[in-house]
Image 1 (cartoon, helix red, strand yellow):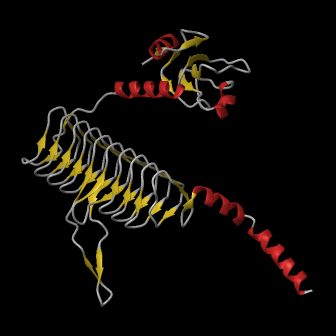
Image 2 (image 1 turned 90 degrees about the vertical axis):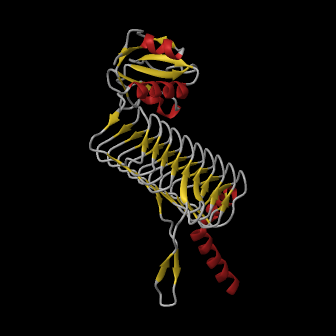
Image 3 (image 1 turned 30 degrees about the horizontal axis):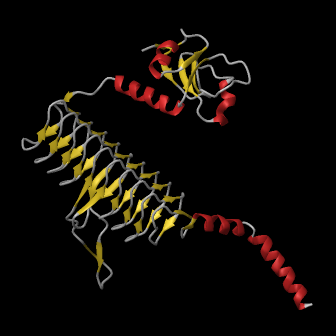
Length: 340
C-alpha cells in the first residue's frame, strides 16, 4: 500500500517541506533508507544521515533546521516519536489477520473456544480451558487443563501454558515462552539426594502484559506467581515461584528473579539483573545491567553493581576502582620512603 506525503501530513497534522506527492510503501531506519521508504529523525546524533539517506520522506521535529541540502521530503511534527508510534500501529492493524480454527488443532470437547478466535495447526487445548473472544493461538501452542486465555490475547508458536494458569486480556506471549512449569523446589536428604517439593499453585498474568520469547515463569508452590497488568518482560527471562511483579514494570533480557521475591510497580530492570530469593524491590526502582540484588531496595532507589550499591556510591566506587593500580604503586613508593 502506498501513501503520499500529503496523506501522511494530513493524518499526523504535520507540515510538508518539499514534494507533497512523494510516495512511500515501507518504513526504514534513517541510515538504511531507500527510495519509497518512510523514516524519521528523533535523536540529534543521527542527523548526519538525513543528508545522505535515500528515503523518500523523513519525519522531523518542528524545530529541525537543516544545515545542508536534503533530497527527501520532510514532514515537520511536534512529537516525532508519538507520530511514528501512531503510524506503526496503523500499519500493523492493516496487516492480514489470522482467522479460523485449523482442522489439525486438537481441542478437547470440554474446552470452550469463543467465536472470532484463531487456532493454528497442531495447537492443543485441553479440557476445561477457556479461550475468550478474539484470542489468537498460533501453531504448536499448548494450553493445559483449566487454563484461561483472555480476549484478544496472542500466543505465538510454541508457547506452553501449564494447567490452571490464567492469562488476561490483550496480552502477547512470544514463541517458546513457558508459563507454569514447576518452581525450583527440592528438599535435601541426609544421603545427598533430594526430594521434590510439589508445586501446587499457578501463574496469574493480568491484562496488557507482554512476555518475550523463551521466557519462563514458574508456578507457585502454593497460591500464585503474579505478573500484574502492563508488565513488559523481554526474551530469556526467568521468574521463580511465588514471585510478584508490580504493574507497568519493565525488564530487559536475561533478568532472573528467585522464588518469593517481589518487585514493585513502574520499575525498570536492565539486562542480566539478578534478584535473590525473599527480596523486596520497591516502586519506581531502577536497577542497572548485571547488578546483583540480595537486599531489599526502597521506593525510588537506583542500584548498580554486584553486590548492588546505591547509584552515586557505585559511581564513586568505580572511580576509585579504576585508579587502584596507580594507588597501589604510590602506596608502595611511600612505604619505601617511610622505611628509609
